[in-house]
Image (cartoon, rainbow, N blue to C red; front, side):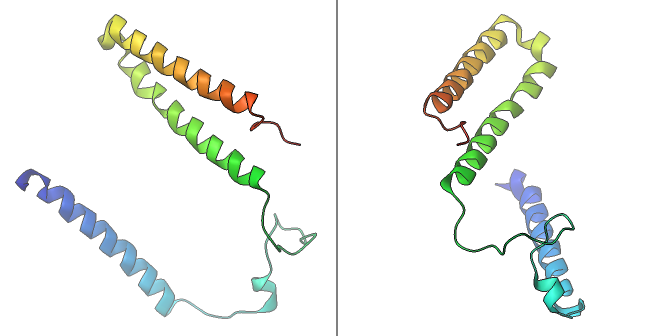
Length: 117
């Protein structure tokens, strides 16, 4: 447990600094609300409609699929850096990982999760 003491200290220091910045901005920051600031912002243009109701499930599904496949792709960088040290075993492990990634992509495609209708 002693070897993790530094990690715990840094964790609490980071949380404390984050909390301090949020508290200072809430208490010391200017508060001048007006109707223009309360409107939704769409790339500098006047919004064509006010946000009401819920988004379609497709938005959430697309977001989740992006996050899942994006996180899986992150594993390629360390593999590419250590490719020569890992040898054939590392290649076979990454081939198995790519196979699983491809199967997941094919499953999502086959189920129509990637089709935007």
